Image (cartoon, rainbow, N blue to C red):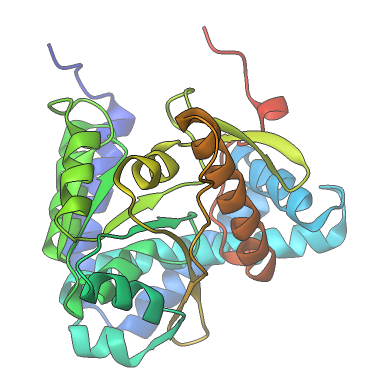
Length: 304
């Protein structure tokens, strides 16, 4: 039996529906300014999400959340976060040519070489910049891929978001609540020589792999490392970020999967290497890391 959506859930779903309908019909400069104003207002209120963002950014910068520099960084972070949603509403109306013309991509040759040789690739990304835009660019330039999405509430919003991403050229599998074959489907895609892209720095299952991340322990989802070990597909980190008038996407070197050890040990080593690469990318673009949730183990509330 499906839970009845709360009033807040219905309002959120309605707001997203209105965004996809209204925002593309208005001048981009006007709507961008409105989203920036909304971000600043939320930042000034210093609610839980903003305080959590500041605490997370303080770990990245190796300082205290009370550092004035963190306060200014969090303002840039909220503007980046709201820019993401503004662009989400506009993406369906943007052409592949426009997206590609505003892209700055580095390191993609490794991915292209593997795909050209018939090898599937596991691309692992943190929640930075506009990962939907990066996906639209990758799929739109001839490389449709499969990804996994968190099941949002209410269900209508999850289906709307899934349809949005499928419209950009992605195959979207639910993280939970599907037919229970998500991992097997991803493995099939990789064995068929197709790419898979997975968000990888926040564990939503409480079953992730423990890693050291900016000097403290957290858990990352095991999926990217497990798929690489299970299928032999290369594991390649990628990091989307914003530029002043467009987007950047940095692909990093392939993660070395240890030949020795059992599967659990090999996955753990791969995920730690991935965490180390994410540290580098996030440290270079901290304002574009949209982590407004608890992440490190010592910050998590006890689970029931």
